[in-house]
Amino acid sequence: MVLVKIDTWRGQVRQETVKTGALLQKFIKYAGVAVCFLFIANHIATDLNPTLYFDPFRSAPKWDSSKCVVIGLAVGYGLNVYEMFVGSLRATGYPGHIILGISSDAPDDVRKYLNKTGVQVKEVSLTNCTYPVGKCALGYPDYKIQWGRFAFAGDWLRECKECTDGVMLTDVRDAYFQLDPFAAVKDIHPIMVFEETPTLTTNNWVADAPIIQCKGIHIKDKPMLCSGSTMGTRQGILNYTQVMVREFDAWVHTEKCRSDNIFDDQSIHNYLYYTNQFPGAVAIPHRSGSIHIVGYQADKIFRKEIEKARERGEKDPESWVNSHRIYGTGENWREWLTPEYNLTDKNGFITNLDGSPSPQVHQIDRFGHTFGSFWLQPMVK
Image 1 (cartoon, helix red, strand yellow):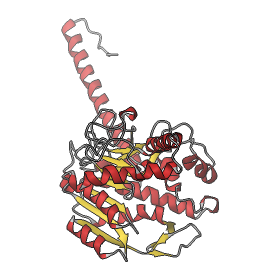
Image 2: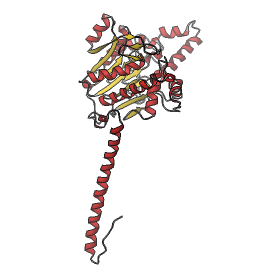
Image 3: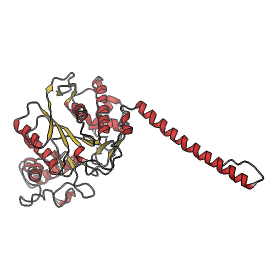
Image 4: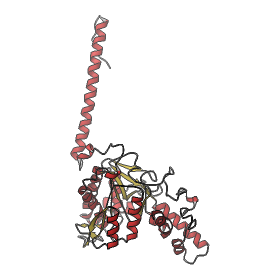
């Protein structure tokens, strides 16, 4: 709507109309700026870490992998686990930081290998827990070890001043790499959480039962998010670990929430995301990002192969599957999985839906021992 000064002279009418229109445009412009400023100020006042809104890495077009970091807690494993995890990551050409928490009494062969491959080692010792919640680590006795890893990750990331770009928090024992996970990120977000298969939702007991018991709410029919693999910017992941730790404190000091359930970090991870408590978090659809959680499908394949072995008359079908190839031969070791599953490419790499190799594959143990023996070990070596 334009206000006009009534005048007998048409030129004067046009002139006043233009002036009024210009004033109205300026009012709208500055009012919009004021609204945006008030919105940001309100969020800064309530957020755990207001620097998220001024994170210089948030809108970066691409990460520099040499400034990125992969962080994991890897206590009590043998050399083969580190060779598969670190070896596959370095084989992608990833030049960046790797920080792993290992047992304070880790053997020499493990220490030598990690030193040779440029891994920054953090020693972790187990201790008695404050509450009867399972195993705990020295430094965080209130938290079961599955929770403590998030607190450690925040500490280690803060200590790494050179880790300025992308961050990945990940499980170690059941994950390996096929591409540099940071180079594969197309759209950078402060926090990126990853969906499991669409068949698996928050109705599953892993997420549902602890949330109902502790919070009294049911998060219904949402994609299950994996707490074992998360990515983001430095500031985004610092915020993420801070939110997780704050929630751990709430659960551990509330008797009905406290338990020795080793999976409830996933319950908490899903609860916090779906109640909008992770600032700037985005869920990456299954099999479309840098992390492919393959566990559900891998288990289905494993169970199907066991059933095939049973039908062939094998006395111990599961042991047979664990000690034999599912498909292919020793010479053609890359053909380790039958094409019917539509999960691998011609080189044997597990793929995303677009056919490209998944940068990280998580929950590979669900395939059974055959995967490590007949595919992963030859691939890494």
